[in-house]
Amino acid sequence: MELLKERIRKDGVVRGTDVLKVDSFLNHQMDIALFEEIGREFRRLFADCGVNKILTIEASGIGIACITAQFFHCPVVFAKKSQTKNIAGAVYTTKVESFTHGKVYDVIVAKQFLGPEDKVLIIDDFLANGAALEGLIDLVHQAGAQLAGAGIVVEKAFQPGGARLRAQGVRVESLAKIKSMSEKTGVEFEED
Ligand code: 5GP
Image 1 (cartoon, protein in one colour):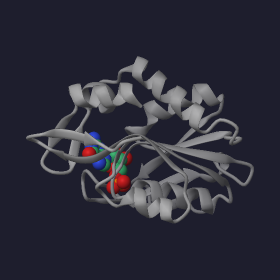
Image 2 (cartoon, rainbow, N blue to C red):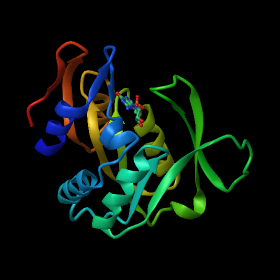
Image 3 (cartoon, helix red, strand yellow):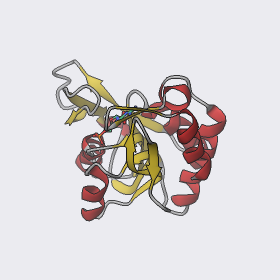
């Protein structure tokens, strides 16, 4: 998605060798006109897949998921990073290692909001090592729901998550795929 790549080139900030900060338009301040184009593109890519639910993970996936859901006319469920140990039986739960903080979180979704009748599109802002996406896919499987695929805004293709998940047969559509990046030279994208 050219508009997104242009924005990353203009306003993205590379930190170290593997973190891209996009706080001015995606992760902190949010450019809703850009989100609308992102949502429209996810709809184009996953049209006719019968998606009736969007699943994301708090916090930074929520805004993108909500705007995207307007194009699918379906609800958004966000997996919560839980502190509460025991909500026995009422939730699906999985563990996710946070890329940005290195901590392992318990992540939960209430059973009442995800079930066998659902065809799920997972939405997230970044794909790096794939832990967040794998956790969400685990929740979809636990629910007996069907997975349409995953829509990712920025994939850091030099990290292993995308290749591993595609090898497992998951349909992963990323709107900007970063081939390499450095503080000195900035971001280089893969060809579409
Ligand atoms: P993964 O689980 O694939 O390793 O990482 C994905 C999650 O980590 C995303 O939900 C995102 O919030 C965060 N993340 C990973 N890499 C980056 C990055 O370069 N920049 C930002 N802002 N977040 C990232």
